[in-house]
Image 1 (cartoon, rainbow, N blue to C red):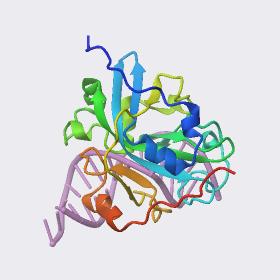
Image 2: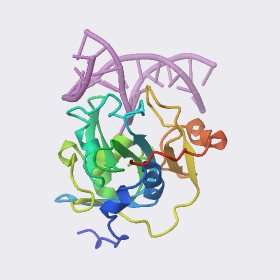
Image 3: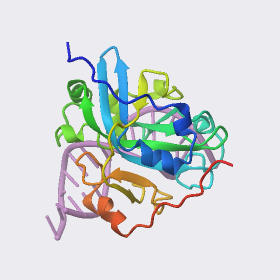
Length: 221
DNA sequence: CGTTCGATGCACT
DNA sequence: GTGCATCGAACGT
């Protein structure tokens, strides 16, 4: 069998997610995403996230108000919002703010830490090596075995969890969001700078050099 | 290095 | 019927 699972920080409590989304996004950098399944344990350190905040955010799935699909965004902070994108990839979000306030943080990339063999299996050993195993939100979900069955699951109680970071994450940079048809002008993507596991081109990742700081004020009423 | 394009399922109009 | 919070292969510079 594999080596005994190493210990991580404490599981992040619901109160962690019940805060302004940009603060949650920032504080998720360096946290550890863990998933235990019958196939084994995988874990990785979060290095890239994006915030989606409210019905006034054109990039947020709640931009047109509540629908059947985006219902989890309106529910309890600390739960997962998973959906199928482009008919091909599952994307994993963590719900933030408060009940009734549709907001979430998209997990876009982690640095593989535990269960690399299982990740390689699930990802069919991608070109780019281990740094690419969980680079990009679709790849991350695949490497972690996350699919629609994890929609609405509690990230504070289930086999899919986030653990508090145990060390400072390093330099954090805010950039424009990537890949959106609307809302890409907002600097709501946070990355740990200079990490090979972060997705996007050099241009996208250097965009922060002239970027304003993210605006505050997206707090639940 | 860069850009373009097809695959693919389903929510939404 | 339209349009994606993507990915990787294929091609151009």
